[in-house]
Image (cartoon, rainbow, N blue to C red):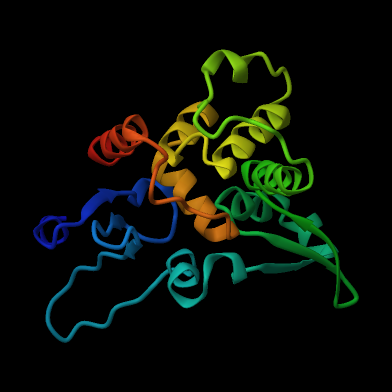
Length: 204
């Protein structure tokens, strides 16, 4: 952690979150997120990775798709669902062909919201922002996500405000966007958004 701070980055310990690495560090200059696995031992010792640590380092997160047969799903339902909740998309196969995809509920809502934002162009004021009252007026979680993501993609709100309204940690939302190929806006629309993003990084 000290080494990352010394490089001017913003590290945070995430070992308890089962992400497959121990430190998430945000590069100040580029905005790139670094996933760091911490290992200890003596010189000459062999190092081993668990399967959970292997996938984030071996493959791009969204391409680390788990393929499971219907029989394996029936026998190991809890393990498969645990993997899905750890943001690992799972394809259910029958006779070697994918028949269904299972993904984390927040990823599902984000993907639906992004698709809707591109097919239902709203006339929101880019400078208008988005109040918590507007979001709370929506009863369905998907409708709230649709509204927040539409305003985010239109440039009305920044990443930290979107995370706050979705009740998702800023780093988690940024990581999800990167994995799902949702644009990550590094230049908020106004001074208030810049301050919000800086406070989010500082609180992280």
